[in-house]
Amino acid sequence: MIPVIPALLGVLLAFLPAPQAQARDRAVVGGRPVDAAEHPWVVALASRDRFGDTRSGQFCGGALVGVRTVITAAHCLSQEVLGVAHAEVDDLHVISGRNDLGEDTGREVKVGKKWINPGYDTGTNAGDIAVLTLDEAMPGGSTITMAGSGDRGYTPGSAAEVYGWGDISGNGDYAPQLRAAEVDMLEDSACARAYPNRSEGAFDKDSMVCAGVAEGGRDACQGDSGGPLVAHGKVVGLVSWGAGCGEEGRPGVYTRVSAVASLVREHSG
Ligand code: ARG
Image (tube, rainbow, N blue to C red; front, side, top):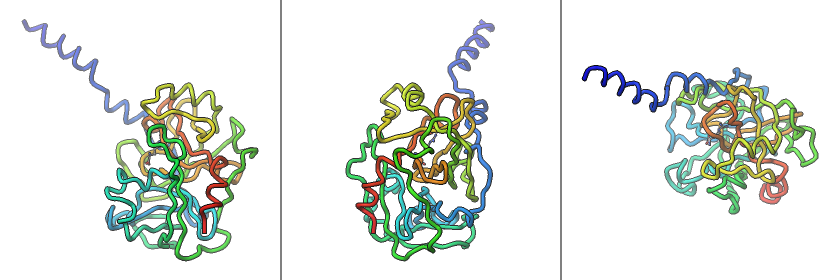
């Protein structure tokens, strides 16, 4: 009778996920703190009504591509994320230049018009883009240029950086400080191989691009969505989706900015 118990335990343990190992593998956006004032085009998307005051209401990221134009992920404005329809969120604002979300440094500007890509596909995550028009202009010189399709930043192997105030461990440890992680732009075929299963989201090279590091450990994570992936000085991607955070062989998938740049221009201002 007695040997049955350890045997059963062994079987049980074999089927249980190892939480410690997973937490370690998912470690960090893999990043380091960066100075928000030096990266004013990285913005936090925030609503104190929906998410409370402690982190200035931050729930997603975005990129300032015009003095009154922010691009972010369409899924950031979904009912799933906001808990209510976006039209019911009256205090949606963006924050630029705030190093610590517990402080009130930098600029906070209200969002006026919102355009959420009607072509966004919640099944595959294709077309994950929204354009926000700000009530007031941010300072000139605080914007970043959107990459075009021929840009060097899309060359596989290019160095890129992803920015955000999101989860730094994959376990809900939200950073108060803006952080950046260095990742490599990857081949489309590598992404397609990493996500062969439609149930996780499907990699579509026309509307998405992916980035990561072979060994894992550096990636965007929850709360970074909508934030910029920057290569060769231009925004090439917006944090969209991925399996876990920083797991080996599971790169981060980003909205391909060059594919939506004309839509953005059409719907800004
Ligand atoms: N969907 C997530 C968000 O809303 C972003 C996930 C990115 N994941 C990744 N492993 N790169 O914040």
